[in-house]
Length: 235
Image (tube, one colour):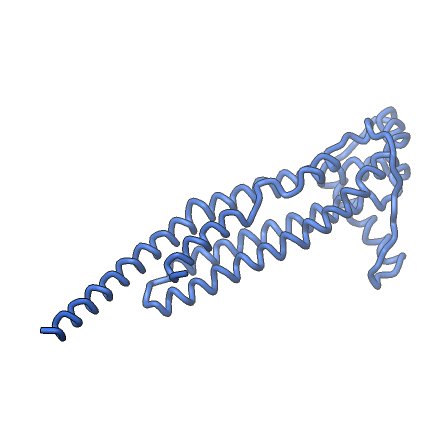
């Protein structure tokens, strides 16, 4: 495959790399209304080295921050209704929580591979004598966008995890606030994903096409020069 054709191949890979919607199943589970949940169980186990006491303290701190942020105030009727149904909602979210972790891992790998491809291609184009200043600037912008969405995914994962692990009947307002935060983070992820995809399509892909055209022109000039030299040698 000629190098100029590789640019088009990478352009296609770039465009296909990031889906607009990260995980439909996760979205459906996380946006479920706890008042309509019907079955499930929770799992508050931990696999890291953090002590149970530290983990519990940090969880309470995050829950309070979310209540303060959302200003969640429930009537006694809503509190009691939520207490009677939130455990079932936690059960539904337990499976979603596991999938979110898988999504986070796979997205990081996709992002890493995407940026590595672009950086490598930029270096190859530079070696061909092309000006890749604009492309490099766009790659840096993309890095910032990717860092942003990865932070949103991390925050989303934490919010869902906290919803699953908390004792919801003890603090239904914190449960409601964390669920609302999770929904907001999911919306942010979908928005950021769409923005990244649009940036790849409307900006980086266009730049790659322009560089390919420059490379073709450069190669045509070299071919013409070779033909001229060969003709001159035969005379």
